[in-house]
Length: 133
Image (cartoon, rainbow, N blue to C red; front, top):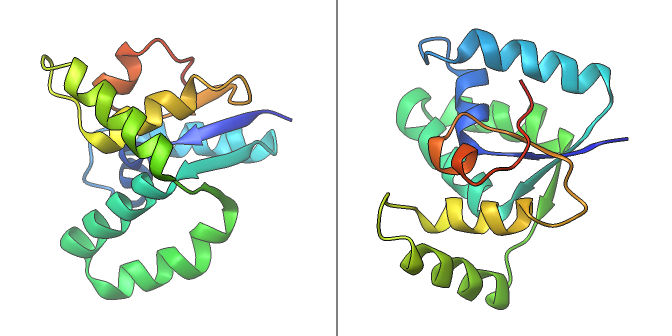
């Protein structure tokens, strides 16, 4: 069973039809579900996802996402040491600009227990992690 790290970019593409990668996200997600992949997400990416869903779709969409989709995810809670390591990586990469959330995702993605990444984010793709498509 593969372990797939999920990013905000993939979730937003999956949930918001107007996002350019929506069709690709739906296909990739369908393949992941068929394979019964374990879907992992960092607590930072989950927070970012909640914030973007609320901003774009409203609180009812946040509630629905929390009730229907989040149970499919295994949350990797960011502790102080992962936060600091992510901050170090973010500060090392002044160009292109890398968010703390993406830096933490890259670090978790490099963990040998993660097989691939479900993302549509150039920073994460540039990190060299295998991407679910």
